Length: 625
Image 1: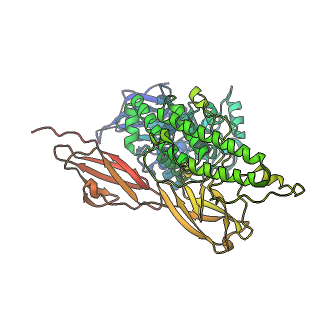
Image 2 (image 1 turned 120 degrees about the horizontal axis):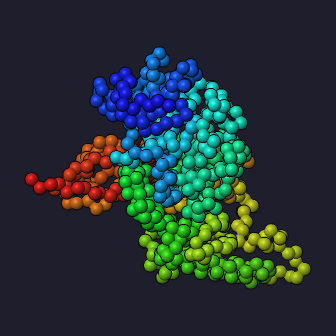
Image 3 (image 1 turned 90 degrees about the vertical axis):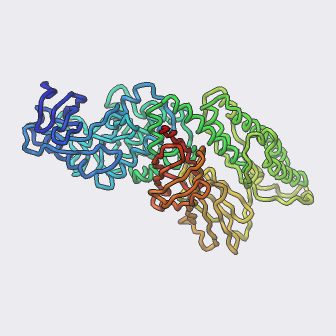
């Protein structure tokens, strides 16, 4: 095939060939008029005479031209339908594709996968809101700009603007088989959710290091995609936790109605997942990773472990043993010798042994005063366990935590020897509702009817008051990965919020005030009355984001902050204003200039989350005159 290298096409000097696909060749070129480097994508000669191919190139030009986003390659020019050479001109990106990056020494990390896909979701959301479905999302179509690590989504050549869902000229399905959605294979209607399935495949691949759908040939791969059958991510890479696994599962749902319904919804859950482990989503984070990947991953593991220790301490203090075990398992997978994690594991194990002993006593004692005594013992043991023993006090930060009931979901399976220490069934723990100690009730005669099996087998089960109304309540607006950090205060009860967000309440005739407590980023409350409770719909408590508090860390003397976006004015770190969250995103994008005497000023942009945010200051010393 002849090359255009060294030739001129209209006003473009073709400097070198940098890529070749089934439809076109890409050249690094020089725009002679504007004197700038560009990429020129030229249609293959054997396709240039075909009207369908030229129309596809024209559609790509029109598609990308109306998409203006930092994470989408910008288009500069188009040859027009009647030119001798059919081409489009875009910005030239110096750097590798995401596929080339992953083929090197790529170390899969769930937080890193969430960070990369979060940025790509921003580009997808912009495209979808302009009526464009990419249809060919894959690592080969993502560029990494080497100067700053910015991700650039490119190659909208088969993007769907019209309703054309045909075979290509060579008889192959449009798109790459390994990243296709089931509806592309089955010939059903496609929409923005088709891209979300593909981005879910990429999220799985980045988190585990392997593709979810594989086979000996493309036909086998397509069959598995059509059935949406894939190994659980945690079975491939034990670092993948339940929270990210749930996000992946929703992205890879076979039916579009069961997936995320928008790229922004997926980005929101990824944002919540990253917030839970203390990883910001700004451009600086990706820049650091792509510039120094080995050091970044090492520091990432340390940061994630610190955040998980804090969450595990909160879960242990609140009596939420199952969540504590899950969090500690994640720490041990990252660092099998993590001292704080092992100290907390010892606390949880001792507490579990005490509770199992007490539950055995309660189960064997079905009648008489001994049963009441067992209940009182369990309650007192639970109350005592909420005060951390010395080994826990050594690793906990001081904080006031409310007691919450314990979830009994099993922790995720882990693989390292250290992590195996936490395996095994987690015993159910007594409900956290207060049980007043008192005299033992008189023993029943031997002929008395024994308690029902359900009550006898579940001595820890809270029995509803006959005057109350059973009510379903759902907590909305908290990202899935953060729900386990919250509890509901309902009267005298403390109820942990599960990942589903759904709980059951016993509502007295006068109603009960339900408040969201414990969590760092959201709060909210609602008074629930018996009349609100129906069998058809749960009562909804909408979580509200807290105001944004910014703490500047490691700043020099004379440090001041100038707000340009998200806030106004000049402030000192001690008197920086509390900021309001953008209600459309539960985030706030800010742009600040950081200044201090003897240092170079620096302008930085970040996306701040509700509640407390740390902003680490790293200014460069100014050169002496």
